[in-house]
Length: 428
Ligand SMILES: [Zn+2]
Image (cartoon, helix red, strand yellow):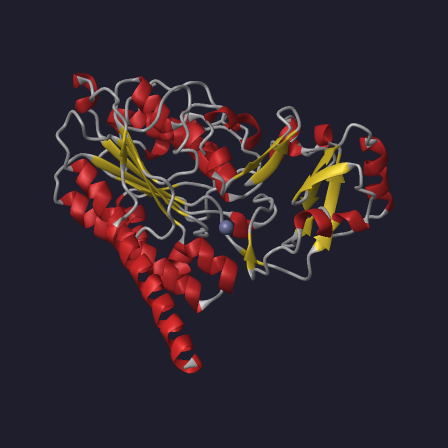
């Protein structure tokens, strides 16, 4: 009897799990349509840009593992064979926002995936809708906002920040982030958007895949799993290109990554072992003084216990190339890792960090493994252009120029990617 009962319970649970799975497959993440005005006549005459982010796709993966569709984009258009430089810290949210705003993280405000704002007295947590959907965290004008402001429709198939209303604007079409959304469905949705009538059809579209980043964290950048993920997302890009080509629209592809990946070395470093952080609020390796804390004293305590795995600066003295020295969200003092080491404030506040084989977030100027891919091809891109490594804040004016949008002054400049534009687009 008891055995029968146990079996029945197992069967019932299994049924519940199965039906939940079924319900999910019946109810895919819906596209949210915003009642923005249709494309103006002038904007309907403009080309289209699909901006694709392949999270964690290191600059050397295409040649190392083979990514025929991406490499072909590079031949047909522009590429950066030695990589594109992420902004510091080379983390997912700061860099996706830098790519779409042209601003360094300390200027657009998302200085980490998770950070504390001492003025708001609130924590931004990239995975929580409460913060990532709240436009008041973001500075700068994302490309989709720039487009909508000028009467051009946009669509985001995922992008950090795309679920927030920023400057009173949202993309005309977007989805709530759901990493389980089928990869093929993402391609097909982008194609569907391009089949809309001209007045409703988005001209700026984002698309996002995290497969390569996940494989890199879990198995390390040298793994077969990363190789397989590279092949998979490359095939997605190839499929999208083929389906878009059949539409005979003037579409420019820009394929980027937010950062690269490196194998983690050694055990995590706990900063509280070097200085008394009891009067500090910590978020990962970011340190925020509580009212009674003496920042200079803690800084000197760190200096008295040097460790080759990290450097300590008062915020104002962080090397200027990192662009990480003006925003209170960066904390003070600022700890900069010198190699692929996991740093955490204290065990008690941050808990045990996930045991990853691969990591990122490090200085891309001193660690080439942090560099990301860049490919661009289409009717507005000059064929066969190979670019020297450049900072990702320069993508913004490049895309704005292709779309003929008036862009505000940002940290990036059009000069950097101007050589990749067709002559007709290279107006002074
Ligand atoms: Zn990652």
